[in-house]
Image (tube, rainbow, N blue to C red; front, side, top):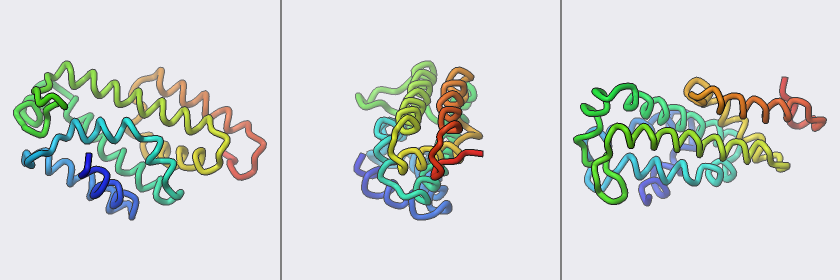
Length: 178
């Protein structure tokens, strides 16, 4: 959690290149089993507090944060793509232990990924339902960056589409969606 708060999050928002760098850093720390590093715990902490991270950004920073989320979800989806990939790239690594230091099975990992997607959806829906300009705008910036990898489930996509359609009908000129 300290690595996320003090190293990754501050750098993620600098530029698109820094956002991609941070995602690759997490991937390498995971791949090389960096001491005291758990990709699972890092993603869990990050997705648990996603609204806060999005809210605390400028519009440009929100776009960069969205790029980091995109790259992270792409990596996570790769690990989830098959049990064989998971076994080779995750199961045996120290970086893939839960908070209780137990190895996470593929089935548990798939459930975790679903939970993370659900959290992203809840955070985005809450922000898109806000009356605050910056929350709405930042959520839209993040959403435009992650659409190639999120949502993966049709139901989630329909819920987001419904919320965005409400914004489309808004009379506010500062949030016009074409």
